[in-house]
Amino acid sequence: MSSAKFSFSDHSHRRFNPLTGSWVLCSPHRAKRPWLGQVEEAANNQRPEYDPKCYLCPGNKRAAGTQNDNYTSTYVFTNDYAAVHSNQPECSTAALEQVTGSRLPNELFRVESTCGQCKVVCFSPRHDLTLPELSIDQISQVVSTWQDIFCELSADPNIGYIQIFENKGAMMGCSNPHPHGQVWAMSDVPSEPAAEIASFKAFRQKHAASDSHACLLCSYVYAEGANTASESANRVLLQNETFMVVVPFWAVWPFETMILAKSHIPHIGELSQLQIQHLAEAMQALTIRYDNIFQCSFPYSMGLHQSPTANHVDAGCCHLHLHFYPPLLRNSTVRKFLVGFEMMAEPQRDLTAEQAAARLRSIESIHYKHRAHPSTNKGHAADH
Image: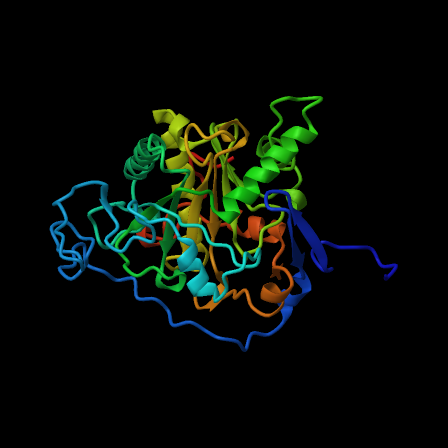
């Protein structure tokens, strides 16, 4: 090891993710290297308000033949090409033997039949808008719709987990540009949220002697809030009464963020109407900054992590938060790929969480498409 003074901005280090028990390698000096890798084509974001060929626009027929309602706000329907179905047979021993080629019990070949429901949530009847271009009231309606779906599916005894998410942009595999997200409800808790729940439970058990209601993310919110006085350690982008937006200390993607409930809220079903508005404000403020950073419709995958269902046995340990995973690295056409070392060893990033947070904080909160002239206004109701 060198005797030189360590710098988080210049020297390699690993950061631990307490939510999943994983590590990320940070190599900030690599951000200085020239880029000769793949460059994406700039996306064409000019779209009509209504597209007669769009499967999600009001009144249009979808690919499977069902006609959409002439909806005027949010619109929910069962996914025509669902990943899981409610009517699902059990995986028989004979079927397992056929696919494994063996009749002998083997712990290396395990299969579980899974069932569930998949829904599509159209955010707006407008084909040409994205989430950051919606009003606070419109985003609040989206969140209220998520809340209704979560509460409805939680009452189904066959549902063990409800994943609400949005993929924005073709770069993230979104097959239709109409503003929409999805809800996949399954009989079992998937791997990623299961790992988080295990961490929540382990944290509470570890601190049970001093605080029987100890929460990993409540503690993290407190710790990040205490860092805002120091610019070099400030990862908080903005906050309001109910939610904090932060670049997590262990972020993997270049401009990865989390929206965290500042108090212990296990799931979206417990949000009041005012708290729903607060979440809408935080989502709008964050996604506007995303669009403004490279003057483009910024792609991302976003998902809510919370209690698997409203009455789940581990609901009390869970803490509502939203993950945003955007792939853009240097500009609107250069993306971060998780390949090589990231696939074979562990995730790696060239931009520290603090550097990404400082850059996002410096971005205007007025959407670049909506500026009548260059603006210096950086204020927003959700800013701290």
